[in-house]
Length: 166
Image (cartoon, rainbow, N blue to C red; front, side, top):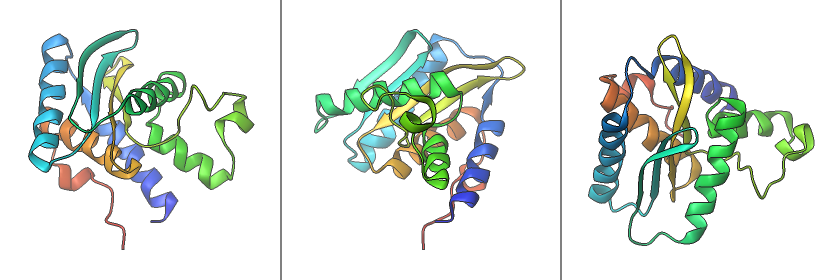
């Protein structure tokens, strides 16, 4: 998996996956869609959809632990602070052979640059929240969030998904 290719694709995802309108009902549909996909696939994940400072949907599926809740919190902190997908931030840090602790003094206990938290953007308004998945390998967490966002926004997932790893 070339990092540059994934970073370019994630930038496209972040640009394309924007909401014209987002409210509590939208958050419920997005979270419910994620839960339905996860249950169908037998995934053990935690799902969180929120406006920053306001949780709107939360689900912990069987097999998850309190550790998943911590991963969600730490991933949210990355997106809320840097306004980028947690996976993109992690890939950028990997590319630079650095970390948020080294580059910005942010403690690992509060920030996780692992995939699974994706910024929610409003058309013409910018980032207002995020959707987070925790429990799968980080690339799969990221892709599950993107897949559900594509379905919610009427986008073709195949045109935005990350390339398969050979």
